Length: 183
Image (cartoon, rainbow, N blue to C red; front, side, top):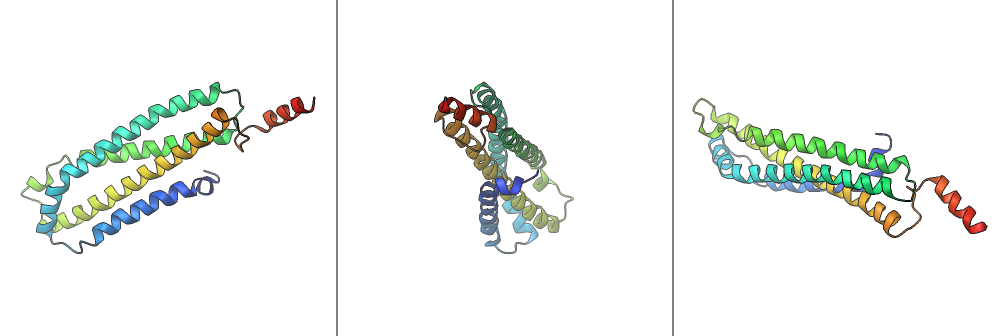
């Protein structure tokens, strides 16, 4: 993860901003009692399940599309530096964490907690805040993954599609092109 934060700071900032905004919207509601939290959880369960389903589907699709990206990367005439493959690996790692997190959250919220009679009402407040924090966090991570993917795809378009010089092109290839121009 050497230099990871420096290379992906825009993506990480984008995800952090999304996390803060979605989390701040929740805190505007203020403090809720256990009974209110139970009602809010019941009301928001379908939306949380839909969010988790969407994130699971999107992250699985992104993982599959990364294989296509790798095929394009290896099939290109340009020799790409290992930094490109590290970018793809970082996206795959973040996306896998996101996939697993969304799947676990989906499974947890399929437990009919609001129907249980032996749960103390004070627990609903903690469950409510944990739900909101986790959904905000997952949303922020999804935006981070999308922004990282956007950066990688933009680089590939510049290299493969537009034939531009780029920092991800191997130095050997740049030297070979300069030698051909000098001949």
